[in-house]
Every structure is written in C-alpha cells, then in structure tokens.
Image (tube, rainbow, N blue to C red; front, side, top):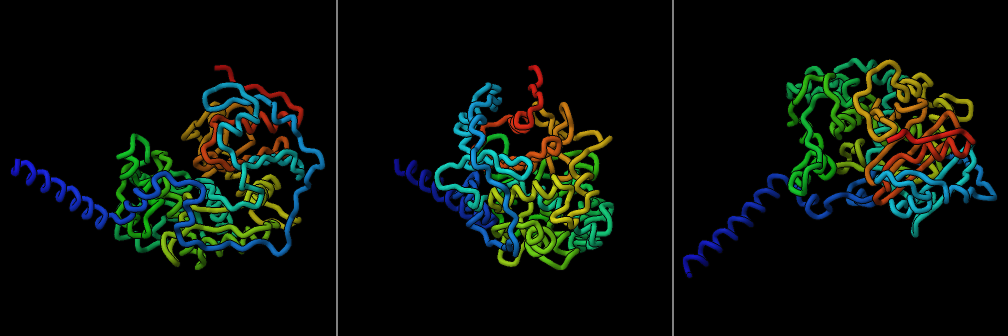
Length: 396
C-alpha cells in the first residue's frame, strides 16, 4: 500500500512538473487554458492601439419607419431550415443586425447591452481591413509591388529559409505555403493549435521566425492567420508607421467615422494582430462597406484606388481556391466573394458570425455582430428582397 502511495505521489508530482515545464516553455498556453475560444470581448486582455475617428462625421439616414416586414422574411439557417429572420437572429445570438440601402438604415435589431456604437471585435474581418491598407500602400508606393518578396520588407526573416520565395501576393492569396495547424479536431488539438498560438501569444515575431514551409509558395491555399499577420508586419516596415496609425491617416479619418477603432497588439508597441483583432462599431463598419460600394470614393475624393476595390472584390478569370456555403464563396485578397449565381456581392467575415456584406447590385450594406451566428448566407436574399428583385436558393 505504501509503495502504491509513493508511486501515486511520484505520478502527481511528475504531472504537475510537466505542466509547469510546458507553461514555462510555451507561456501563451496559460491564456489558451484561461480564455479558451475567444469571445467578442477577449481582445480587452491585450494592449490596444487606436485609429482615431474622423473630425467630420458622416450620418446615414434613419428611416422614420423601420422595415418590420424583414422580421418575417424566411431565410435559411445553418441546418438548412427556412425560418423567419427574427428567429434567425435569436437563434444565432445576434447582437447587432443593421441593413442599409441607398444610405438609409432600413432595419436594425440590437441585443441587450448593444447599440450601433458598441465596440466589438470582428475577428477575421480584420483580414479584409489589412487588405484595404495594402492597397493603399501600393497606391502611395510604400509597397512597390505584390510580386516583391516578403524578405525585402522584413529582412529579419532572411534567417529562416521558409520565407525565401514568399511574395506579398502569396500572402494576400493565403498561399504562402507556411505550415499552420488550425483549431479543428477536438479540444487537445485546439489547445496546441497555431490558431490559438497566434491569437494568444505575446510575441508574434518570435513565433513567425520559427515557422516552417509545408508547401511551395503560390501553390496551395490554406486559410490561416500567419499570412495577414505578416502583411501587417510588412506594412509597418514599409510605411514606418504602425498599422493603426497608417489605417487612421489613410482610411479611418477620411470616411466620416463617428468612433475610434482599435487594433489588438501582441505586446506594448508590438505587432498588430491583423488576422483577428480589429475592433469597430457597427455604424462605422458600415462606412467601410459604403467606401467600397462607392468604389473607394468618399465626398468626391478617392480614398482607396478604384482599381484596388475592383481587383479585391472580383476574381475575374482566376480559378477559385475555395468554395464556402451554397453561395460558393471564394477567398480572394482576404475578402469572401460568392461565385454562385449573379456575381458582384462580397463580404468581410469573422468567427462567431461577424459580417460586413456589400451588394453593389442593390446598393445594400448589412452589418452583423453575433455571439454564435445561425449559419448559412441570408444576406443576398435580404438585399434582393428589399430591391424587389427575384431570388431563390439553389436546389439541394
């Protein structure tokens, strides 16, 4: 019996010593253990850098009478059921749902504690924001060409041969070839995933310096955080400004924003997590949609080159590398672009149901913030309904 107790004590001590060694080796795992899957407020544990609001605010028109008929409009959810939009929003724990057409807010629903001015993390919607910034850096010649190697801007990476042939376009296309483990496949796999690592680490540079190559750059599309984070680092090096500063001066202050936006950093004065930590209010997120709806123009001034808006939101003859949902959304230049049916609409999308949907055909913008999301893709049906245009989901 005494021998058994000794063995048990040794096993317990060994277990806790192993845990201690693991957390000393990879300290970010403490945050993974504590916070697990992040929610829309987890960003608050990280240092933030602000992109300050505009000096002159643009105001959408608020209709005196809201379009309550949308409550009963039937849309498909993630289980392929037709349900009223009102139930879709409830089931998806949607905190904000705002529909804008022709610069008029026609429909808005808010969960308790939320309004159009509640600052919320949009997770992977941040990727589309860094795409905007890259387009602007190309326009002002801070970045010379998408064909440039990433090491031309971040010479530190030359010590890692994995980066030798990776171009900026490879990063925009998510075809860097860099090894990346997603969080799918169970609790243990998620705990040790690269997805968790890059969200919770306090030193992204150190992690990036160690990454290995899994595929030849430019050949295989894999959805991952590394590529847009690298673009953020490139932008900082190329412009001499932080992502927040550059985005503020070039975009945020120029489009009539009413509130500050923030970028989550890995550490004070560190790198912005441009893959998943951009925080914005719904009313100002809609103004990004409006900027793109107007082909990069605001108040008769070209803020983003029209050519970049076109290039970013249309795949053209390029073969899609992905096809998500019934709408077969392809990931292109860090935006999601449906390929099913009529082309033209597109979206910035983030985990837990964060969405910015833009439909130039009907001049419609939809913003959704959620804690879960009900799945599927109801936005095109809503936009076409408001415009009086026919719409039908593809047959199963």
